[in-house]
Every structure is written in C-alpha cells, then in structure tokens.
Length: 286
Image (cartoon, rainbow, N blue to C red; front, side):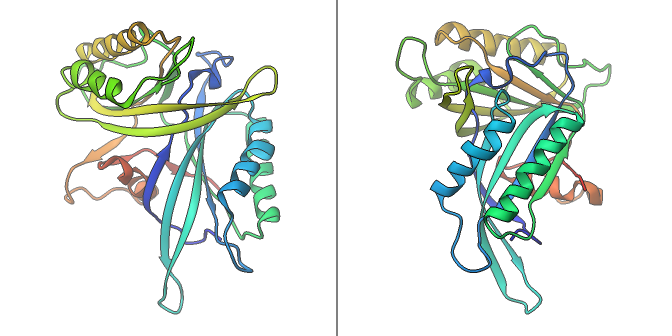
C-alpha cells in the first residue's frame, strides 16, 4: 500500500555506472520516472529485500535493459482515518528514459506486476520532463548561460569501479571532493552513496558502487567550465570512461519558509528533502 505515502527519510542507492544509457543518443529527449513501491503487504508482512531485488531483476530490468536504474530506500508515514500514524518502508526506483508511448507501456506493466505480485493497492508514479539534459562527459554545453543568471541543479554520477581492478576508495573520493569540487563550488554540495545495476549486451546484470554529487549553482559560463574541469579530472585521475551529468534548469529553490510553492510541486519539496534543500522539480502524472 502506498496511498497517502510521504517520504520521511531516504537512503540513496544511486546507479553508479554510466553505461546505463550509453546507447541512447544524447540528443534524444529524456525524462525522469520515479516509481514509489510501498513494501507493506495488506495480508501481513513486508516485501523483503530479496523479493524486491528479484522483482527488479525479473520485471524492471528486462523492460529497461539499457537504461539502468536508481534505487532509493525510503521510510514513509501517513495518518489514517482513525488518526493513527502508519509507517511503511518503501523502495523508490528512478529511470532516465525516452518520452515515448513504449516507455509508458513498460512503466504500466511494471506497476501492474507489482500490484498483483505483492497484493498492493497502488504505486506512486512521478514524472519530471522539465528541462532535463543528460551527457556522459565534459564539453557537452548542456547549460543555458542566461544573461540574468538563475539557479539550476546538476547531478554528477561518479562510477567507482576502476578498469583493470579495484575501486575508488572512500578516502580517495573524499580527497577528490576536498581538492577538486569544493574549491570550484565552495557554497556547498550533497554527496550520496550509490549502488545500481544494468544488463549488458550478454544479458549479465552488472552492479557498481557510485558516488552522486548534487550541486545548486548559477548557470554561468564560469560554473559550466568548472563542471567540465571536475569531470575531466575524475576521468583522468581514476581511469574512467565517463561521468554522467544530469542538468535540470527548471527548479525552484528556497532556504527558508518564506516562499510558498505551487501545489503541483509540493511533492517535489518532500522528495528533495534528502538533499537538505528544497529543490522542486517533480510533477505528478496520472
């Protein structure tokens, strides 16, 4: 069940490898799909970690084999008609996909399968189509440098597997943040630990740990150059093939309670609390 579900806290398990949409042309319009799967079972018990992992492997990945995915662990709560606070664990799956009828048909099949398999009432679906741009390296000119600068959001996905063996350690990545990212964006950032998967051309499911860095900054030429420098440095320092960059220029940001958002983006405020900032970018779909 996920009716009235509100996210209380999210532990990101973000997809780390960049191959997940490498065969989709960068010029193709991509949208973000977030699916919220409640884990309470009406007849008792919960959907286990193993059951959900199997669901991802057998239901979601076969329908979106080249897109990969992002999984968030969530804890939500709502108050029922009797005034009792109900808590429910959840899984939130994020996909970057093309905006086509085939995509929506696949999403619908995933939702229906979950409802039937785990006796659920609903799965919340959130779509973000607003100014979403994706690239896999530096120099792609994703950012519109407005004459009057405005705040935008950029998410950088750093895969940690090193070709030839080993991974980028926690200490190495912290040093990268301290010495490469923070000097260019001293106002602050958010780092999320990740673990994601995709299916390769042989049908094997590939998993990779990752780090995801979220930045809010003005869309200036200087900041765009700084993003390119960060990506280039990571590629060279850790022998990487690519870094996924997702830019969203349609965000509203507030650091206090003075600004009241439109009703259609209230959910975006709730979801984005994981970043410690009010970043509104999600829109509900029917």
